[in-house]
Amino acid sequence: MQVPYNPVPNAPNLIETPKVHVDSPVAAFGGTVGEALSSVGRSLGHAGDELFQRAMALQNLRNETEAKEADAQYMMEVGKLHANYSSLQGKAAVDALPKYQEDIQNLRQQMRGNLSNDMARKMFDGSSLSTMGRTIFNGAGHAATENKKWAHGASIARVDAAINAGAQDYDDELLAKRNEKLIETEVRTQGDIEGSSEEKIQEQIDRKKSSALSHRITGMARSAPWQAWNLFKESDDKHLIHYTERDRVEATVLDKMRTVGARNLASDVDASMPEASIEDKVAKGRDLAKNLIKGDPSLSSTVDYVEKAIIGLDNQKDAIEKKVLRDNRDVVVDAIQGNYSAKGIKPMNVDELIASDPKVAVAWDALPPPEKRKMRTHLAQNSHDVFVNTPERSNNYHQLIGLSGENQAAFLDYDILNENLTEQQKTSLLKMQRSVRLHPETDPRVGRAMDTLKPSLAALTLSKDETLQFRGALQLLLEDHIATHGGKQPNAEEVRKLGAGLLQQQAVPGTWWGTNKYPMFQVPISDDIIEQEKANPKYKEAGVPTPTDEQIKAAITRDRFNKLYGSKKEQGKVPERQLPGT
Image: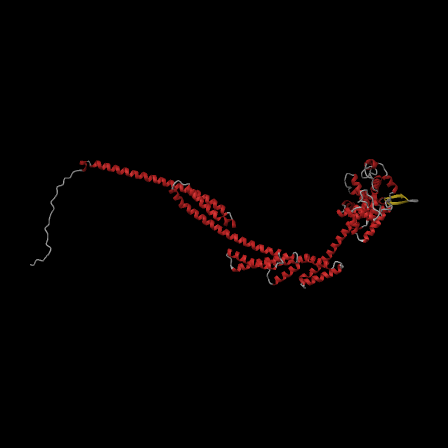
């Protein structure tokens, strides 16, 4: 048997010699005491760690609470700043943005500095920075929005200004073209701000240009309506005026053509031919109007308006001339009556007349020759006896008084100075004429009384002059009745009683023989009775002016009425022939 070859020989197995070991307890040598002391040390170390951790937790809680309170306070104060800033609009909001951002940052730094330690500040930073960032971002958004509104509003204002400028400077063609370009530019700016489409922007441009053109045409129509009409027709043919404005503009221009245009044309005609007759002026005006309207059927009525304007202007000039003549005539008449003399002396000739006052001299020079001839006649009457009253003058006087209440226009046309009247009657009627001019309203008392007496008057055959004379006598009697009854107006029954008394026939002795019958309102009163009353010393004793002839007649008429128709109680109540001032 062959043994395999192994070049590494096997070493012998060596076994370690066993050691001697004595098993003794640790406690036998004080080991338990050491372990106890070690355990106490470990317990004390754990207690210190626990106290430190609890102190750290308490401080962290305090820091967190302090930071949260500061953050809450910061959010409230920032909210107030944001609310105030959000109330700003337009340019004010844009201008206030930098200060708004600065205030937010300053407020955060101020609250941060009031915290007790860095850890609280660090915690505060974590939340407050987020709040500050959001608030500043929102403020910037508000500023951007208001900036757009500001730009949009400013653009609208520029467009409105351009539109209104056309109405003021309507004849400035260059300005009109500049305004058109400005309107287009600004409307496009507005469209960009609003994000509008090109179609909408172009529509707005056309509308605003139409508005500017409409304002220009209507502004032009206020003083140059014919020119405005031509511009309107030209613009309308090109469809430049929006359909919502067209009818209004056309109506405005047509109205101004019929008023302002017609008056302007009438003034031009009058200035070009001042001495021509009204017929020639009308013919000239109609021809000019026809040339201006160029056969336009919508303007055919304008020719008639021009004719009316020419006639109206002529009437106005005539009225002005009549007023000037009347005013000058009144001044001269006053001077003839002696009203410009300190002593009431009446002038006898032209030299004395114009010497009485510079105003009289100016008025005299302004009178036309026919009026001066009349005034010379009145001056000559101042040297004659025109103070004696007669039945004819008395009747004429009463007729004119009645006419003043019935037809004021006819009354004003009367040349009182040329009437057959006494000087006192003329003075009284001239004052009435001036009063009517100043206060043209008719005395309603006489009108009502005449209405009450219509049935009685209708049964009579009074002429127009007699009716006027009756009205004048009734007016005097009414005035006397009111004066003697404490301002109380007579009722219908009293008016009928007054009328019946005035119409009652009275027997008056004839001049030579027999008797004549007159209605009471026409009974002549002799000059002797009037003069006797004037000579009564009671007026001088009472220190009152002597009554006029007509005042005496009114008192006598009232006495006659009271004696014939008044009750005994009334007769005793009213003194006989009581005159104003007594």
